Image (cartoon, rainbow, N blue to C red):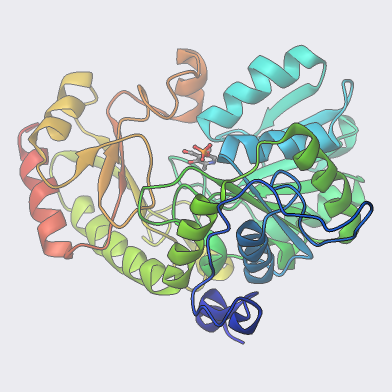
Length: 382
Ligand SMILES: Cc1ncc(COP(=O)(O)O)c(C=O)c1O
């Protein structure tokens, strides 16, 4: 089956559920046993739950993995991966422009726990991987918020040669645009809060892994630490996934259109969108993400001040300022004070997170309406 069909039909057989066409929400913590020692598929929802299992299997199927896992938030899922596969003394090399929350978790928790944390520009990682005896390589491509890409197959091959596991944050791409397990990665992560859910009404993290050997310890971490996703949230994300292909096509088309118009606006210094020929990784994007590069477009304002950024934000009526992305509605994020607020100023400067940077999550409204709102607000900074 092709992607759009799988997204609707994967991992669910209505014959097993009273012919309910849509997966039921098993909103319960326990399952009854008839006798001591009875082997039943579900016992307690922390261990497993039928609605969660349908979602986990669907995610694994869409990512071409062996198993899937659904956690109560994206950060809970990332934490489960790192805690499962890293010990004090191990080294993790993470892409330099990693998501701010993941940066905080590494520097505030893992580094203090004794894990060596190395942030690196992964343009040329040869020596880096060998030198540090790396246990895990953590990628994020396209990255948040500057939408930098790394060459996944090339890096995964180098990591394998150095004996490292490769995990990847695939949130911005979704499995519709990029399937990293096919490119050599071992573990793929999504903040399902974003595009997989798609309607800004759920917090969730999901994982898909390449092998049963990786699934086993992760499963143990999940049930032991217990940050599992609830059945209602799993159902909402399953519903979101059914329209993922269509939504991503619309996000990509709108984002490209808005990115082109932003490039021509006098208030904008630079537009970051890998679908534009001006983007530093445009050629790689065309090769690695042939279906499109997603719905996020980031800009540097010419007037690089908090006042100018605030003026754009305050003057938009349709595009509201909010902390997340990936929903059907267009949003703007001031990364300096929102997604990357915990990152020290000098590190933000190295990452390219300026005070006059705005990250737009372009929704699936009419592109002309989105543009009218953004361009009128940009005019106020001239
Ligand atoms: C790229 C990326 N990774 C991870 C996360 C964390 O996910 P959550 O907020 O669902 O915990 C986010 C959230 O903004 C994100 O944008």
